[in-house]
Length: 293
Figure 1 (cartoon, one colour):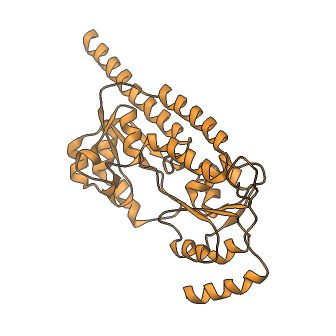
Figure 2 (tube, rainbow, N blue to C red):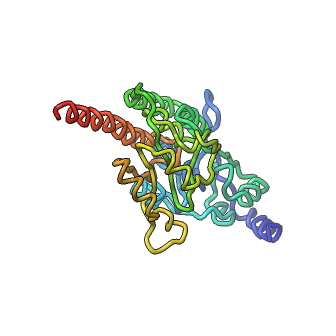
């Protein structure tokens, strides 16, 4: 199938080709007609690209459950990452992830299209590096540095410096994220110890309900259910989890802002910081009530 698709696309080369890059005497070529086929590069490209430079983003960019920028994405043609669709847009640059649309990436490169793959961010520090990386691909270094400065100032303002309190990331099928993940770093930055990481989970994995209950977290971060019914989400209605949530008293919901290493992660950091400060306020109020009695 891949070979047949390649032959079909090669037949189009006589009629359409990649967009020419713009040149100047002092800088590397600036790509015209940029197409992004990855949710995270979609959002960074929308923040960094020059007017008219970005022509298409993935269809996921318009999904409010996955994207932090669904309204902005409406201004661009949506793509589904198919090589044929992308090639006919005559891109000068395609931005992709390292784990998505591998067949499309390989085929587009065979056809002479410049494709740059961007790895997932696994730490808050990595956000700045990725902004600079994508800005460099776009020839928008100055815009990238301005965004990095804004992001790092916002991140510094949200640090707590408080002792760590136990928190759990718990999702459908008992899934959690542990060491070496962006979510874990968000918790650490805001004064929480990730139970998944303490339990030895590296990357993503399953956290048994028994371990979660025994850890007795002060905060549970989970996801909002999707429309309809899903067997994977049934565990989130487990009586033991409901009791644990009632005892913790603090339940937060991760959303689109948690998914990608963009400046939108600051909203997740701000929410976790508020939750951490709220725990200390609650404890102070309880202690004061006990002394009054």
